[in-house]
Image (tube, rainbow, N blue to C red):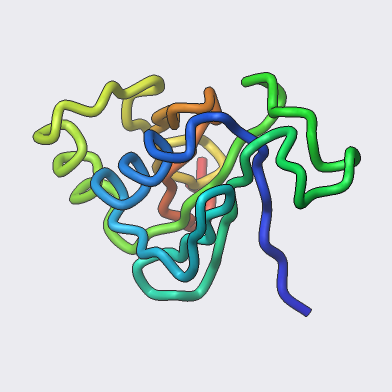
Length: 127
């Protein structure tokens, strides 16, 4: 079983540009109303669909409203990614930090308002 999260949005072009240029995602498939993208290592995918498209049933017509969702991207070198995104001028929503439970992470936001937590998981710090 695999999982592919899908977001219904008017912003297909902006979304494609963000995920490819900012995060290095590739395009698995696209047409005029749908785009399926993959992480650089091709281990995960995410899709975006235009709202109210006649090829889709009404169940898949309503667009995402920009809140109540986040994505987590686990990386090997969170500091390297942080520096790269800062160099690109990407707005950092939550600055890089260490959490007591062990994570080192920071957050950005995609054009649809989806928070993206970029994290390196590690063991909790011993007190």
